[in-house]
Image (cartoon, rainbow, N blue to C red; front, side, top):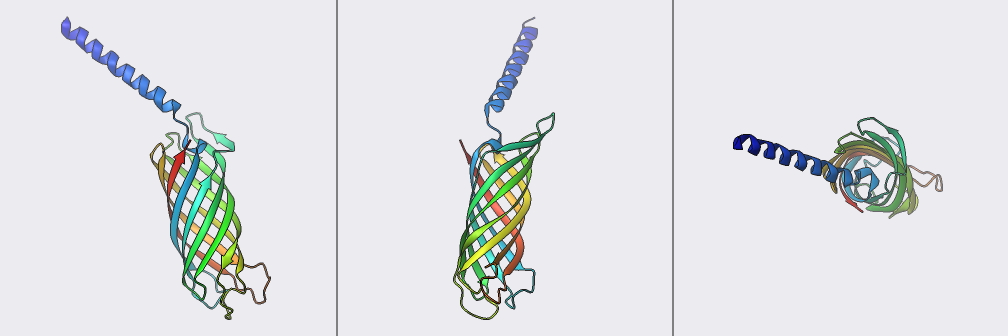
Length: 201
């Protein structure tokens, strides 16, 4: 009789623990509903022959993301497709090419498709901005310091816990001065981009 009572007490305690854990989990905001900072770094290589220089660029971005501004889709089990906003301070070390660096701002909408367990998301971003390089007035290089940028990246995000995540993405960026100089060779580079994301509330 005592063994049966002990067993029922153990079952009841386990059920209460599971219920409490589920309630605590429900109180934690979805990762897409938090403000975030991300530190991203990558390596990009030239993919078009618009310049005679074989550009290699190492970007480091400090990015800010807003909470989701719109839910575009939700599944019955909790999957979500959301729209967020991303703004970034872009710093690029030009490893190969006449210029040495590029510093800019960029902004873009960010689409994120989240799994129901809130741990994994695919994302896609496309946007642009402007910044400054140290042009060298050489044929095939950038014609002036002011240069505009257009970028796109798509990748996967994995939550390590409620406030920390890692990202990996395929990353493309284009630089040009929109024809302000002639010639205007531009830069087109493609590569990989890795990031660490911190959420805060």
